[in-house]
Amino acid sequence: MNIKQILLVNPPQTLEERYGKAFSKIGATLPPLGLMYIAATLENKGYEVKILDAQLKNLTIKETVDKCIKINPDLIGITCLTSNFNKSIKFCNELKQSMNAPILIGGPHATITPIQILKNKCIDFVIRGEGEYVILKLVDALNSGNSLHKIDGIGFKEKGKPILTKSPSLIKNIDDIPFPARHLVNLNEYKPSPPHYKRLPTTTMFTSRGCPYACTFCSNPIWGSSSRQRSVKNVIAEIKHLVKKYGIKDINFWDDIFGVNKKWIHEFCDAIKRENIDITWHCEYRANLADEETLKKMAEAGCWAIFYGFESMDQEILDTINKRISPEQIKNAIKYTKKAGIEVRANFILGLPNETPKKAKRMINELIKLNPDYVKFNILTPYPGTQLYNQIKEGKWGEMTEESNKLTGYFPTFRPWGYKHLKEVKKMRKWAYWKYYLRPSFLLYRLSKIRSYNDLLRHLRGIKAIASL
Image 1 (tube, helix red, strand yellow):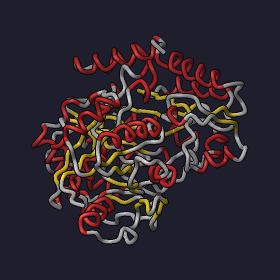
Image 2: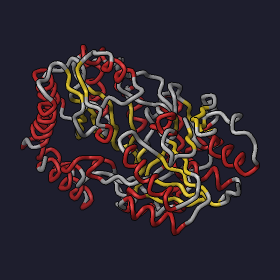
Image 3: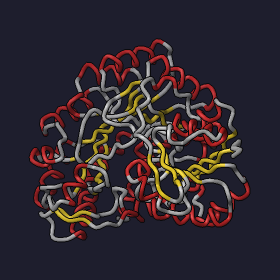
Image 4: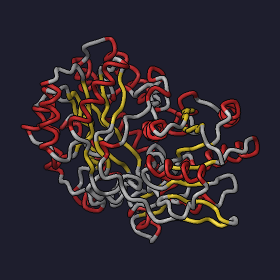
């Protein structure tokens, strides 16, 4: 086999399929960092790489296939979530009928269900876990004719039978991974959702991989349960690169948890100020990690918003999902963050085990008193491979459907015993959004925060989406 040119594809999935009709109006299209990391690793070894983002271009399956045919690569790599697995297989089937290039699938769903994927005739290989070095070893082996059995983290077929090699090891020093190959896409074409940027142009970054916590609903099959942190020097170098080459003014850090090590956060914030880098940024954090000194330091270094995964305000529910936080810590996190001058972005999940409509309404009324700047009400999604999914399959907590295309956090697929039916879960989400956002006091509060035309546009887009639920 002679592989020189590799095409990496973010397969077709519309905004409405991901977010539902109402939130498709403000749904984000973000750079495919996973594909760009893989592309950078391959380019460093001399391979020619292209990225085709069908979701950004809102391409149909046929349009995506036509573009692949035009590029005519030697190998096609596709990233796959559980929610777009069925559509991705349809895409691969049509692709296989038109091209001879081998097809591999990576990403969360490939890591969780590699055998299921390999049973499809259109798929030649799967990559499990972190893909940067695994795909490089796979391509090198295909070119040299060396045995695939010695490559950890892959799946392939031998005489038509699916074969899985040993599970892959996590990359220990993630500083060694090259910066994402952002030059392979047009960053200006990507659009964040209204709450996720302060200034334009904005983009996304990772400073770490993995999460040391073990919430039962969370699926983290690729990066694992150990947190691996890039050095401050390495992160600052990437930020400078983004500012100089792309004019970036705002960064959304997409770490599962930003700065688990507080010493690292302090050093990072000191470096931002010392280097006099003009950047605003926001991140995801945990309530039990929030303290006044750290938050103040973050604000001084340009942090303008923090997204907290609170999930619930009920201790019984928090314990059920092994969240390892308390309502008191949630209240303190909101108070300390606001005191530091940082906006609070709060994530809650409706339809969790042990939740009832009465508990949900009580939580939302309590939230109104705490008044976070932004609240996101997700609907519980039992992802295959999670502890919660297995518990529900065993008959605990409630019942779920098996509609994999709806596993996005925006569609009800699980009914806890405390709810009568799935429609009641959906209605609760609508009630929560309307109750929280369309109250006069909140609207006046947000109007008082508007400082620019961009701020005004962000708020108008958000209100329009909520009103259309």
